[in-house]
Length: 507
Image (cartoon, rainbow, N blue to C red; front, side):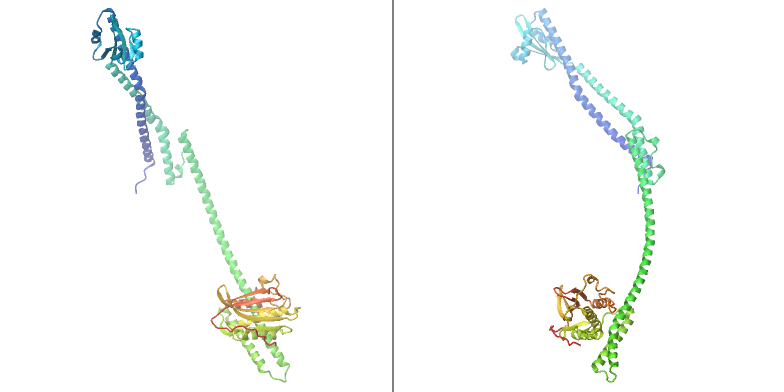
């Protein structure tokens, strides 16, 4: 890994890079200045040389005119006198001279007067006796041209020298103090920031110049101070966040403790509800046993018939199974499902409700055909039917209906693409209060104000059906008086007979 250059070395390198840029700019400017001087001075210098050569040509023509006037010479003898290595002479008439007509007319009007002509020359009309001709003289002065060129070069060199002197002065006197030094100082401060040297990351005010670079350095110092302030605020916020996190952790611990306490309280409440449910479960078979015993006690001279003994044995067996289920409360066990005849379960439920509540004037109708097979726990299914039928009988007690009755029907149905067994318990009583209907399956919710309503019958029934993978629905019968409870159980492959109306015997 390459070593990091020192701040001084880094500043010098940065200064050298700037110097190279300045040298390049100086060179470009010098070349541009020389080109501008060449373009700007050359026409003026050439004009000076042409004017000098024209003046020399006019002087020669003036002297030639004076000679012709003093001495009668032939014009052809004048030409050799004027020609030399620096002078060219051309003589002829107006047609062969190739002069401008305006210039021919002006020169012819004033013989012997030289006039400036094009291309550093002069022209004059000379007369000797009756003979006249146009004489053109062109003069070149090499020394003058060389002198002017030297002057031109000296001017260019002088200007470049002046510019070089100015550039050297800037490089030696101005830039090191006012450009390179501030740049090196900023680089040193930046290195201090990168290396974490807080004591050197700010540039002292005494080292900040009063120019644009000084404004940049002050802005940088302000930015560093602002960044450090934000870092302190962030560190404070992180510390505060850590405190809040620790406090939140403690509160979560308290909430977890409270949750455990609530769970314990919930278990106690569940224990109370379970006790009430057990009492509710035991109430019906105990009432049946009590009724049979009272009936036998009221007939001491007669023995019990076989139907009563069989019913008593069934009730005692149910009590025995309830006691076994109490021993299973410590562990979860699924319902013991078996294929049962739903019509027989309905008849047993009606018998138990009749013994518990008394039929009064309520009429029971079973519309479940014989051989309709349902797979469920026999005792629990009977308990569900008992609770629903007993709930319907209690609703019909004191009802103004002329013919109070409870109907039980069953059929196979397809709901949402799945096969179900639908068992419906219907009555023609007053129906369910709409205010109670949403919570009717909640524990301890009862619509009866007498001492016999515990509010657990429907909750127990709903729990048993849910354990079987089904659902219990409660609603008021549309368009007529009464309530309807529907038990939906998953259908099995066991074939069931078609439902056909059958009226059970009223006991």
